Image (cartoon, rainbow, N blue to C red; front, side, top):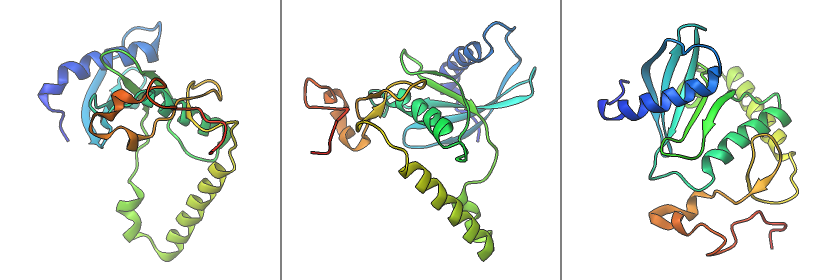
Length: 192
């Protein structure tokens, strides 16, 4: 997929922010944005390459009209937590993120592959069984992860819990009311 011209200016500035966060003090690499990887309900996803390290990255750009309070931070913290607590679950490494400002972003390791739902019909029964067992192991590992309260994650470097980030509460402009001023948004100590 090609990248629409209207998004290139924002993408280039966001990419500049991401590369400076990733490379820190070394010279700016020869960055090539060469593909739009996809688009979902919350993000646009572009692929980019650093020609000096020959690494590929995925740049997730949250859509402004769907970005929920604390959502990007919760996403990065969730990935970090899963990586630390459940090392057998494959998750992309997060290199840089910005939850604030005009161009929020998440720059991650690019993992090439096909989505399971696109290759499932080509699998043999043995391969399907193996994939189903792996998914079951992941679900069990995640279900066994315990926390002191219910809420979103507030930090990618600790288990600190913060407000919830439930998308169902935000549709049709309701996101502006997601605040303790309007109703309790967590974290919650109990379910009652």
